[in-house]
Amino acid sequence: MTVYQGTSFTPELTATGYALFRAGVKVSAGTCEDLAASLRRRHEKNRTRWRLLSPLAQAVLVIAFVRTNLTYAELAAGFGISESTCWRDVREGIAVLADRGDGRALAALSRYQDRLARALAHVVNILDPDAIVLGGGVSNIARLYEGLEPLVERYAFTDALTTKILPNVHGDSGGVRGAAWLWGAGEGVT
Image (cartoon, rainbow, N blue to C red; front, side, top):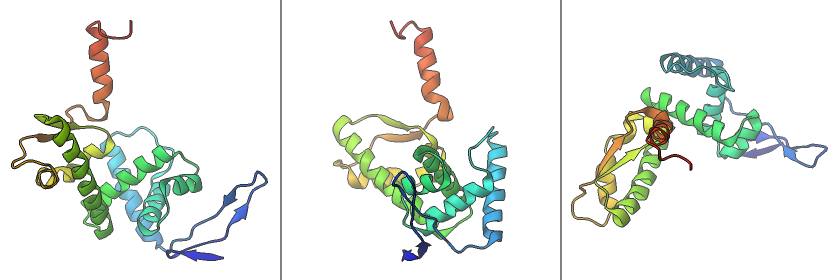
């Protein structure tokens, strides 16, 4: 058995030459069930039709992400899902935990917000846009916008930031709506 970052695992070799391991994170069943219940409520509120992972499995995934140093690829392989599904489920779980005031989740969101501000500062420096509209699943976290503009201003080469940073209006389907609108206007594929 090997212990790494508080995670214990025993590597197993498959017939095809891959090394697999099971990671162990000590957490109470009550913690997992509590987070699973919060995720289930969020799914019902957002009318999520289906997920590859049950709310309980998603809760375990999120806790493993928060408490270990495993990458999305490693976690995804362990749960039998794609990296993008892993990223989406972890992001959603961290948002739920942050809404509940979990310190580790708040720290993760703070790191993400700082990195986002640095990236957006580059966009401001190069393009000087009037507004930047964020899209995708992470952009649905309202807490992300709190204090984002001052952070961007800190990293941008400007005396005063005039660029507005806004959430999308149509949620995750904004890109699809835009494509459909362009198609209807005769600007689609020729």
